[in-house]
Length: 417
Ligand code: AMP
Ligand code: MG
Image: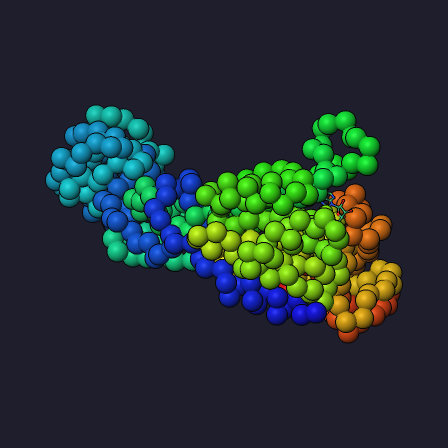
């Protein structure tokens, strides 16, 4: 058996990051930026008004106050989007809207609230300092300034800044296309009437969902019976659209373990026993002319889920140019005791309860059955506890390393680290 860390390391050594290419801004959301992106123009691109009001020369209204109003002729009206033809001389005002270009000569804006709002002769009731309510060209950023750094995973805030900076497309590492298929002649699609000795296919759905959650575009191919010819044909068909292939089932030592049989013959996939529970039988390698990475996960749904979490998710993130280990890890206290196999790292499915008021740590309780076919209990878990290889028992009250599977509120994360 090899360790989890060794197996993961050998996988990541074989996974490249997909080259970045230009994508439209909304398609780029959630992807990692492939290069530094700079501002195309000054922001704001020109001096403009921060208020609806009157552009003036500050000196002209220096003495204005409630009892000493200053009245100025209004010589024009500038709307947002109007070209910059206006200029004023001392003793004049121009009505101006928020975002409209400042007229030449003006150096301050008097908000409409500080006037009588007249459109021919305006009464100003309050002084304005030079620069008041003027948004200077370049006061946010200058052309050439860095807006978003390479490697940043683009959120709505970045999309907004990139758009403002003038970019219709930006280079990002694309979402990998991950083909997911489940092998097993006993499998039937959910939503059908279950036949004798058949079970519903959980894995092609669960793994496709996990792939999507990791940022991939998942192609759920569905069920392949335990037949070598059919599996080979299907893999060949699917390779054209795959940046990665994930299979489940057929990797143990049973008589009809078709994945192992077929892929062993090709000689590019290595089947290994990894010192973990669940998920001992693992296969990883490449197939096809483009050496597409392929993961062959065990068939038990819980094993498949945990294997994905531990090995496939980091690989999908590597393809996207993102840090491979993004899950929040917290210390928590075991609410009960449980056993763990000697020499294997256990990923215990638990329910994590955030810290109660005044407590430093949250608690974890194993969910129902821990056997690797107990997929309905998996639904009750929101975290995995990592029990080290050397431990054979987790005593109640012990502090344990916990991987949070769901995005939890910020308060939990804050306590966590
Ligand atoms: P295998 O790895 O093919 O030997 O499968 C191990 C166990 O997982 C068997 O009990 C299978 O019936 C079950 N299994 C395999 N694939 C799936 C699947 N897609 N959905 C649910 N159970 C599965
Ligand atoms: Mg099988």
